[in-house]
Length: 98
Image (spheres, rainbow, N blue to C red):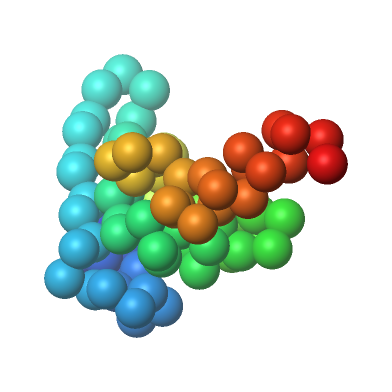
């Protein structure tokens, strides 16, 4: 399995909206760059507590890359509109310093 296919399979297995998963693959002098887009509601599942899940995914991608003699990097794209809607409300309430 190639790096893009592996990432798609892995992410679709852990998110609630697998149909919204998009992976773009670009190759340049630095290696392979995989850009991941997921539904805004799934960002927490992809990142994990303190980034633990995203760190594990990057580690697995490095291993897949080593097997294919390539350096693989992962960029997790910010969802359209930034944060999840209810998180934005929480942040605005926090800004009021109540």
